[in-house]
Image: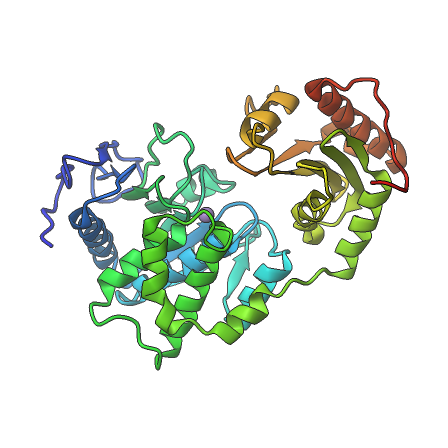
Length: 411
Ligand SMILES: [Mn+2]
């Protein structure tokens, strides 16, 4: 496992895509050395070398302070990956703060955080970022984040970007270390491999830190692979490496299905408002608090269980300011990413699509109410939001004008 340091980009000439990015202006050590590990199915050597590169980077930052950013709603894959990076960083006396921008709302994620004593710092504009030397982003399709400009101003270096998503990887994140493996089902697997490299003696069931880490990573892995249905060979290998240290009792508690009273209320609303169009269900749940936002995909899953239904779209208005929706499908023909981008289009302000998803079974969308959120009559605002979403949806599936609302009975 020899790593040629300095500015050598040719770690593996056969399998990987490597790109050199110029310095983002934040790095103190000249031009960043960026590697994208993509579509690699073989090459143990490369895995070693990616870890070597990461650990060398951490070593160079010994004693410094790191911020790990979780973009979007923190999920088990992101949380466990951040824990693993924190663990690897401890070896070099690096202090880590894991920061998120949305609250942890899904029951499973709250249980994960609580049971394993994970400390997540919710971002607030009062937080003094100058206390940090560098930042990393794990498990995110995007590297652009809500505090880009603040990090930039404070001169905080973009250190690592590690992810598994299949989105466009042509825009290389301007980080010192980039590892994107689109042939993996989750980021937890990439971090399990780093841990494997970092611990030649393996994980020890007697070490509480190892048990905590292995349990979190296994949960991240199970969650992103839908309990291994989507798992690749690499994911199974990672799971087998973690297995001996997983606390199955904790895992059982974390994965226990619980619906909070407010999510049951949302479900009740969804049952009342739902409209069935052939194998589609369209439903809305009313106004939703941000902490209950994660209830939307759970409700979509519940409605998807209805016989004869293969696609569900559920939305609500979160914190009175944003229409937030979730799509679930088991249709053979619907590609959620295409569907959501097609039916909602692109935001004229940001130039980005309102929604998106994976190609298989799930997606989501967010439409800010903007100016209209200030209107006093909340019922009217809600009715308007619903009308717009529903009309676009019906137009898109070619059902305009067909009001086949079913209040009770067969559906
Ligand atoms: Mn993930």
